[in-house]
Image (cartoon, one colour):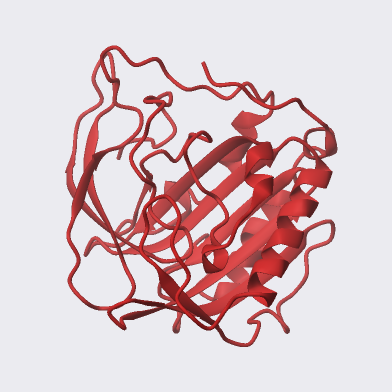
Length: 282
């Protein structure tokens, strides 16, 4: 199994990222052996708003070196902490695989918040990011986790305020997509976390919603956002009905969320609460 964190980021103009609040269907066509110069992997990612057929989009997993392109590296001193927050291969069963999504370790040109296709000015204050997806043996993405560092605690507080506003003001009509994504209508269900346990020092927003595209196909998703200091962690469930594939030995969404919240709570306070300047990519 390829370590999704082993290689540096590449390409300052990465492919359009999959939408974080919608289903990610993942089919591994090949996992290439680790070479002396680079790690390569070819995967197919498609986004869908239901059970209909969608066209596959082949991409190269960041980590494969591209001639003439310099790596895009975050200058945030705490970027290595993100590896300890996201889902890891050791967390899941042998039938599951965890891989870095295209552009998953980049900030520039990538989206973190996209609830109701809303506008999120706080995105400009992110300093480091890591997003991976867990797929099953049939090639379906079932869970994605996205760990993000912002410049300050105020920046993540602003991100949470923007999420609340996006949900509260989400229209009942189709909303134009961003980054070239199609328009979609978001219909919110009741908040899913009323009875979930809380983790001290960690703030939480949880949304249960259906996304319907222009053709009428609908996808059910649960998106959970966790926050501690300047660190934000998104946990996205693409098949939220019933028991989930085990993560850390647990199969319920509340328990899986608690597992990730405990990782966030365990971060060193100095890292979680420091203020850093905007990151430049080189």
